[in-house]
Length: 456
Length: 132
Image 1 (cartoon, helix red, strand yellow):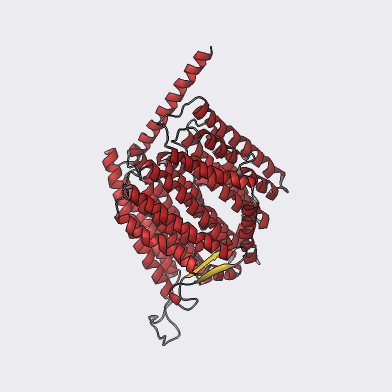
Image 2 (image 1 turned 135 degrees about the vertical axis):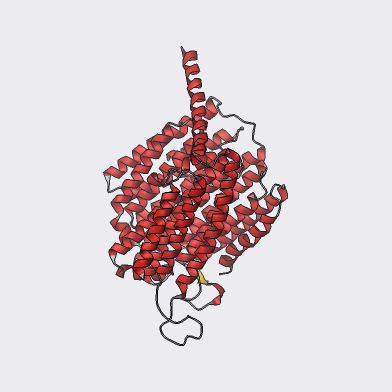
């Protein structure tokens, strides 16, 4: 419980202090990185306590159970919490090395870390909304970071669309409370089986739309390319590597644990929407010639795989969805950070990230694709789709690699060495997940087992 | 009572959705505000019970549900904060684009894309010419 409390309190308290300081000074920036590392450490300690199949939790303020807000860290939540924290650390260190341009940037990233940690360890549906809104509010302001017309226009679109998604989520929370009479996730999951199926399906659709907007799935993706190309690279990395995890986690938690019957019912629909996302993202990414645009459409395509795996369901499908979310988030963090960089090893780092997106060994993406194929083994149509999607992703990433590094279309000044070393470290993490995949595989299976236990 | 709440929430949500699709940015903000109010109404309606005030120690059995009131209050506060932020954002956008219409923002985006496209097309032609 100590690690759980620290993981929430450290970034929250430090974020308020940092928001008052002038973030453009390097010292404040490094302070923010230190706080994020402390948050990551607390989460890793928590993960060691929780894994492989335990859970740490309690009620805030020592209220009796059923009255206070419950916190609950289990394998599923902690995987996403550690992952998001890792992306935030990498992106913030990258931006501090580049030179922060806005005084609120470090404070906001730390507050975002507080919100994200909270989202992944809460056991209460309404508390989920509060932490969700805390992290989204920080993300809305981060989207304006840079302050030129492009960023402001992108932030306006991002804020409006995501607020709509948030209120859809709130409507579904109200519906869930009305039909189950509890806000506790475990309690609601136990009671939802007795609920009128029509009401449950409506609630499930609301949750699905809210999280799909967050994730940027095909029919809900329209805000995503503007924002990811308009925002600064570090912010794009934070949004796609950190904030988008809320969507994947929400679909797994609310679909897999709270509304498993509705998820099974919608299985085909999810696979169809996921497939549309894969094809749409892939085809549009092929037609792009700048790396940020290509990555934005690639993000739409890659989350399609996660949705298809969730649609397939069962322990194997959920494990594949979790593993692919982790690897996709690492890929996107790495690639978005390199978008405006030039230098000796940037090409190699980009190539490694590209291999990972395309699913070629030895990069981590290969393991992710392998698990996806394993989950879809019984369905030839889905297998063919995965093959087509992989071929498209191979074309679009290496086409951009060719433009940017072989023909030297990438402009800008040479990046400094510490910054290059930082992306090289992130690249090594991606490489390590491919060379030694056992820990990550075990982790994803533990996390999927949480959902299997909840389903009984 | 539930029906009244449902009708009110539906009307407010519909009006909000209509305003959200407007070109004027201030109306878009108003649309978001209305939709947030529809969500608050739904939260209140989700726990409609008639009874005494739920103050400890509980004297009577039938008390009104305090949880939905608490949720509604929290949602109102969060809604207020994001509305304030959204208004500031619109103010900055109006300052940067010198327009209150969302079309102008979209046009700027389209111009940027078109310029990029032209540059790439030009490069492509040059390459073709060099190859010939």
